[in-house]
Image 1 (cartoon, one colour):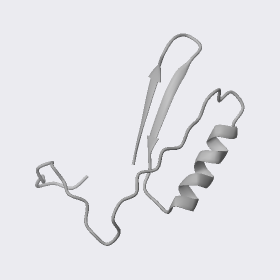
Image 2 (spheres, rainbow, N blue to C red):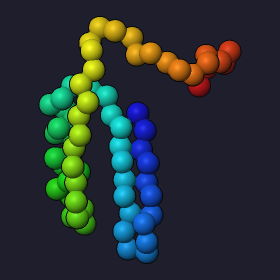
Image 3 (cartoon, rainbow, N blue to C red):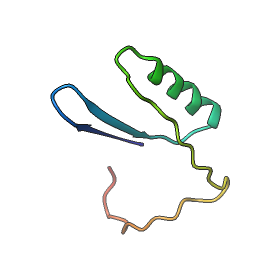
Length: 66
């Protein structure tokens, strides 16, 4: 869905990735990213959502598609 990368200093950056998907798939992806060489710290946080319901949107809908 989205990724945020923040350069903390010349040698370190922090990256946050927001994803949607089944828990097992997201866990698999996170495990591979955390195992990459150069990754010093990694943590997966999953937030359960209700299935079958459309996500509420606080944004106005625009007249054009992206």
